[in-house]
Length: 323
Length: 286
Image 1 (tube, each protein chain N blue to C red):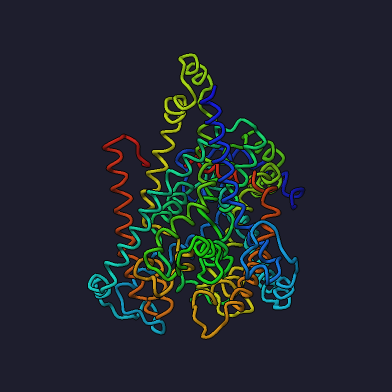
Image 2 (cartoon, each protein chain N blue to C red):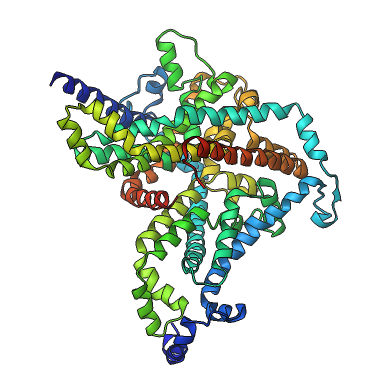
């Protein structure tokens, strides 16, 4: 670039740019780091505009926000929308749905990558092992639209492969997507199918760091493969398990919007409607910006308390914690 | 010895099960979409196409929507990944210099956004106020920097040996010059990994276009797919349609899904190692 002409100048400045006296002023430091600051500027502008402005935008949940008046001159209504939400018949339903969906996903989904990693780790043929790994990571990169499409088509009452099988063994076809009772299992199973393989990566990395000498010692003590797994392998990855479990517990209420939105129908709202889909409908479909923001904030606070208390409890009980 | 063999057998079967459960759905869709209607209707297509024909694919091609989707998605992915990589890498490099003035403040400001977010509606309102709704920019700017990716890159840059950068300084390079001429060439793997993460995220994004785009001419592949594959089916009961007709539509949907997924299935095995690398850098730090 313009390296040649500026080079001698820079060289002369070098000692000054390297070590400023400790009492040097803020402005001097800014001058010293001006190019670095220039590099970080676009990034910080991004955070300001797309992260901090929305954060301040939360005030509209205490207003009767009117698009034409804007945030500054919309009237203040205090906690009106929070009260409205708590008193709404949907309040209990969407909190319960969000919590249960997250809980089932954690309860059934969390152990699968561990088991899968243990199984993959037992594979002795390197090439086959790599093949199984590559295959099992694949669904993680398939879009939610495609996965939801596959689920809906395979379960379709007219010609879906699952109902064809049901018919073959003499059962009545089931319209799975229209039955509220099936929503949670369908969601959880599809999540496991999509992400369990990818979830093995961290465990597999932890498994490779186990000292092979431990296995040798166990073998000498007469431990078979099962005993080795129980007494060497699992203790070897237990700290990874605990940390990931904590992270996942903290994220129980953070359920991806897309998959639920793509799989639910008004008939299954009863079990499928969660916070984010409800906020989407109230806010963006019905245009109730203030109400939707209040719901989001209210549940965000609950979710935050959840993370903090999960962390607190685990620190008291097991001295494992995230912070 | 006997016990060990049982174990090996069960183990092999389980691994086979994992592979089948993952791959068979794609294979099944492929086989159905390539089969003649008569065979599909009788429900005896499972393992290989019967009455091979490309009729469904001709139909999808003639429909054309999928190509509009592809075009838009490719534009979003290219532009978005470029912007994201630029913003993230520049920011991450500067923030990897712990001596930089304000670097700690900036990091704290960034980490706060992991825990506290404005949420869907306030973000939408900001994007709307900026006049980005229904433009290509609403697809590439609101998610331009992912904090996680920024942290991964920052870790990577922080581990580059200081001597290499010092030599640049002696050559009279500014910090920007060092970044562009010394650090970037050394960081190709991390650029590849993070670039792929951003690309996949933009390629698969459905919520963004759902919220920000109104004009069908701008819809990316995922939205087109949802319209073709899910919309008809979920609203259900379109009056008196025959089973045959519905089945034909199903084959059409399989063909659509395959057309949008085959490119990914083909390039994925070659890119997989970069993804794994990224996941591991991230997890060690986290």
